[in-house]
Image: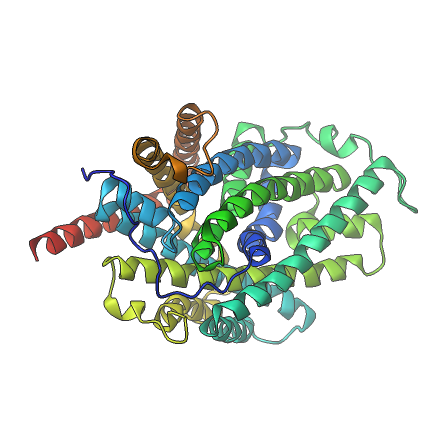
Length: 461
């Protein structure tokens, strides 16, 4: 096991420009996470868990807050586009950085495809008869091109994209609270009828809660992108610290608040929750003319924004891996301040989804979701164990770098690890999620083996 002596971190990104401002960082954090998981995946979670989806999002939200605090601590001390991959390498060696870095790269690349398919389904609903695969291809061309441009252009693009959907969710929450209170014109207060009158708060029992919990865990994935982007900000240390602090409570408010409003206003077993999406179903329930379609526009923007952020995040994690000698060297070449080959490589799977949308349009979304279902838990576990190891070294050798500190260390770090273990056990017990565990377990083992072989090969050179 390598020494954890604090030193200049692998992947310090000296060749990447510092073109991102603080406002860009904050919106990138929100842009990468408010996408298909919230707007599309939450419908299936509500259908399975009923009103208890609020509890599921609360529990997973608390877990992600702990994870982001740990990641913020390490990233403020050592900003790097490799983020948790660079931290894992520093803590446990190149094999760990290789494993978690390429796992996350695969996760983000697959998420790009998921977002593109979700966006295409919305557009084909407006323009029936147009091929879904053609829209996925168009979106991929646009965002691949956007990310090939200077990083400040990406940041500005993402800022306005994310700002629009954040404003829309805030307006949705305001309208929802007014309707629940019975003060919105033309609506009656629903009371607790939808929360307790259709099988109770736990209509799906423990199994339904587990499905909702897993859906919510996937929905939170992507928040880590802000610590990747921090390496290209004007002030990486201050930027990541501020972005992590603000993103945590904003995400909790948007996610938990949205779920609470939706299951209070709309019967959880309504077909519209899955078919139209929970946000559109809730606005239709309020009877606001055109609000449902307007929300569909917002959902489309959210999905496209998440595509944009995930192409960025995947290209930068690939760049960092290559810079640290953990990938093919060609991907590390920087042109015009952008690792363009890494952007192109990270976009490949999105273009593969064009073919999948043509070949298997009915089940491609579920198939992709199964493929990456538990990868985010692997990433979070690496973050936690790396923080446990690196925090002690920082305290001994560079305490001044601890500008962000994990709460109640090390107790809450262990609580977070226990929570992750519990979720994995729950996944193993449910037939519907067990297949995700198999896929993720197999992928992790293959990458760990490849990382160890790569580490040995480097050591022998």
